[in-house]
Amino acid sequence: MADDLDFKRLASVAEAPYGPERKAPAWLKSRTYTALVQRQQESGPLLSLTGSKQNGRKLCVFEELVQIVPAGARTESAFFCKVCHARLLAEHIENAPIWWPGCPYVRFQNR
Amino acid sequence: MDPEGGFAPGNRHPDVSGSSATTPAARGDAAVSQGEEAASETELVHAVLRKDRKATEEFVSRYSDSVYSYLSSRLLPHADVADDCFQQVFLDAWQALPGYRGDSGLKSWLLGIARHKVQDHFRERLRLAQWSEEDAEPAAEESLEASIEREEEQSLVWKMLGTLPENDRILLVWRYWERQSAEEMARQTGKSVKGVERALARAREHFRRRWQSEVQNG
Image 1 (cartoon, each protein chain N blue to C red):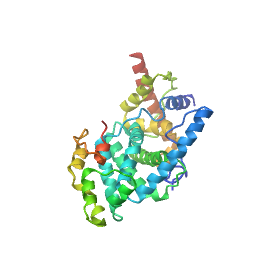
Image 2 (cartoon, chains in turn purple, brown; image 1 turned 90 degrees about the vertical axis):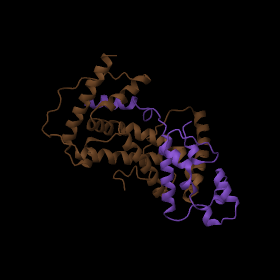
Image 3 (tube, rainbow over the protein chains, first blue to last red; image 1 turned 90 degrees about the horizontal axis):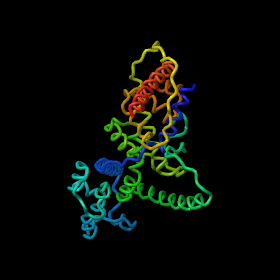
Image 4 (cartoon, one colour; image 1 turned 30 degrees about the horizontal axis):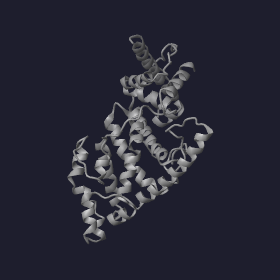
């Protein structure tokens, strides 16, 4: 069918490979990350902050504080971002005024 | 299990991220780089499965633009649907991650999950669509002036798709961009093949009219 072929050709040239790349909004990445970590917590505790650091991951300033005090593995496994204002700002404002090194919500910003 | 056995998480699936031709030398470099990428992806998957929150951050950060780009190209102008699907792709990925075998890259695997979400949406929308099986097909369709090599003309195609009624847009995107057969679309939506083909013909006609009007008006 000529018209069918016409559209197949149109689809093949008008997609490189699936339209122009769009950046995911920072607030959407932030909400998705929070939801994902909360989903991970449903099946047991998160890896401790010490564990993350040993894997070469960078902690934020607040996590560093928790990690250096002798708080115990259980405390270190808590999801501190849940009570952090950086998360709250990032989930509601596209260009959130947050700049802390090691903060996931800062990393999600499209700046 | 995916009926086509192609897109379920953990299975190989057609690479919706596309591929490009390369020279032999470039292929050599690409092979090294792909090897490094695969190792890094394996490490990332293991870290996410250990619930390392920082690895989870990298997982979202690294693949979010590709997933969002794909979803928004298929689902816009319904940004809310694209946003919901985006979050659901990553949550589903977490559930399916223990079964990830690394046959395809992590990005392709995630895009396979995203493709399932898009098809679920298309299927649900078209199931609810009301179109008469008796409606006549449009008269012989005129050929499209598909000389759309320039970038602005390619984006014009997406702009045109965005202005179509939703069911027309879904029909065209599902059939031609997602390369789904009319038979399979009919099977998934509970419509007749003839009905889908007629609806497709009308959708093509609507697109063609808008396209020609846009091209003529410059």
